[in-house]
Length: 367
Image (cartoon, rainbow, N blue to C red):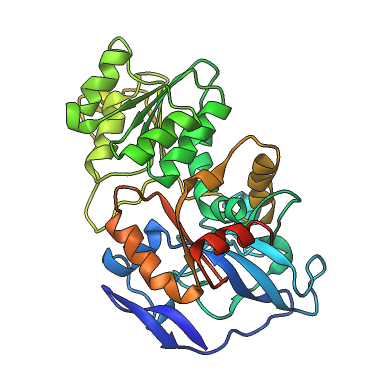
């Protein structure tokens, strides 16, 4: 079958690959809608860990079930479902220790498009349908479901691990799609002030729409000084890191409060080496600042909870989609859009529907 694969570091393209195999607990699906992620960009162009030859890319998808295994109970042929980006093996013993994301090995929860064939193919397999695939609630569109499988859950993970209390001041570093959902999550968890850091106009507009009280531009001066100035020198109660280079980790520690401040990092840092931890703002090792470094939460229950938020009108994740392409053969174009990041882009959705992009948008909301 045809799939969009990592051919070699820095080179992605279409290739013929083996069809997926059905397991007793699993399902075979075809993509209805998919979205390249910044993680796909890192996988192809970022020089991370070595990947298998012709690895099928992609982990953001809404799919249609083509086959189900003999032991699947909750899903049926033809059903359109959300496919979580994070797909733990719920039979790993580490799950019983609460280690949902790295149970059997580092990143064992994040296999799709990384250590297992992903979703950018004519067909793909999910080994355990009942624990992984997510039912789409009535009233939730394909656009909303697609954003929930990765972007919403990752941004909300950042907000959850930030230990936000009612009335807190929260800084969100990076307001791409993940950061925008972190802003929304921080608002829902009770932050009084949300200082979002970014500069692209479309992202600034969405940050204010989703709950930011102010957007700070790092081009206008040292961002740590800007946050400290707005908090009377005390620093933010919590900092959620959602984008940027290695320096943002140091900046987060610099700008968070002594004693009870929390840094919650869901940002990906490419390459090797070390992240610098500042001695001075780290209290020379005794600042009382908590740092969390987290992979997004995944699995069926988690993504169904994210979609419940959309169904209730608590979030509008479809507002992240700025570009819509018709036909799954345009995945490559979508990947390069995410790599090049034109000024008007937040997220791009590729739909199975062919015809005009406007028709695709209209019809995909009715699936």
